Length: 110
Length: 359
Image (cartoon, rainbow over all chains, first blue to last red; front, side, top):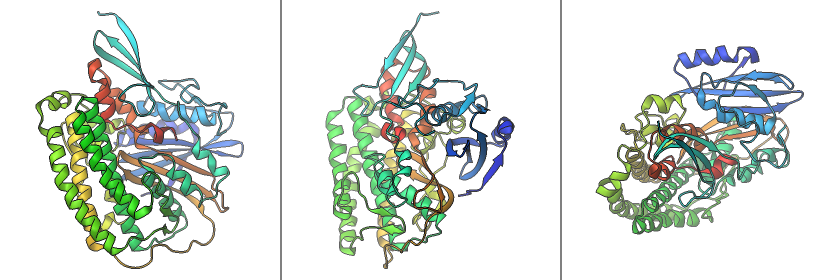
């Protein structure tokens, strides 16, 4: 599998996702990793057995745009990143507002 | 226009062995929208990377789920092995493949039993689970476990399987094939069963691809995508073609899974015939440093294992994207426009595993 990660600015995630959508890629997953003062977000897209991965470094107090306007199925991954890590994502199409996971501690992975 | 009402479905329901909740927006007897809700059994297993070293995390990965246990241990181990550039011995790769296919057999037979139970065919349900016991017996004989196997390790496997036992497995699988032919007939030919499955919950190839669906749920819509084709473990040495159906309905999903069981039998026969001799593990030196996204084909579909390591014994991140997590969007789509009476069957046809999904 191609495990190269292409670095992308948080501000250009919509454009990059749009390009991949037009190129026929579907969304495979989104996930967050905690790094000092920031989050590392990985968005994985697939077309058949081919894979492209975007890596975004998002400062802790900054927001990133949801890609649900391009990939509606992203809502589940984005709600998960919000609930577990506290990643701030704006304009999610189905926003559970912190209620996707019923965790005893707020944003336990932060 | 009819009045709309909302029916809560789950998290406790006779067809749901694990908890998921759906808010079904109804117009008379038709579902017009379904909003999923999970999170009832979230355990935060991925967070244990803070406390367990990269070797111990194999055990954690195996405990994500009782049905897909072997696959989770395998996916995590392969991700770490790629980071550490470890070449697993051929015999271990072949045994991993046999166990993966036994997992597929017991998972699909479990699902067939649940489906038979959901449409009220109890003797068929018992037959499916009786046959599943054969697969679990082979697991017990070769790994010592029936649910959690603890047989994977970074660099190989923990237990070898003797050639005599493999020969015995070959015979037992021939017998299982005959039994499955009998059990499969009602699923594929019975008129009452077909009434419940044919044309119900159709997902087109375009929808399945756009929604990122995986596994038999995707392949039943006509898309030939099976991660085993990438050749991980011993799949690169095995002849097989992904099972695909074009109808995209519940019947197609059932047919795909049944044919995948027969294919799994064939893959096990091939592995036993080609089984190499030699070591089953290599020594692991040093600590992992780097990141890798491993893809494997679990019984329910493609699973992703992301591992990020920092050169110490504790890794930074383990993330598991399970097949059910990806198939939830497809479930929401096929529920639109269906009858309320078909909702339990449709939920089952994605073969949901909430335990995996919640981690």
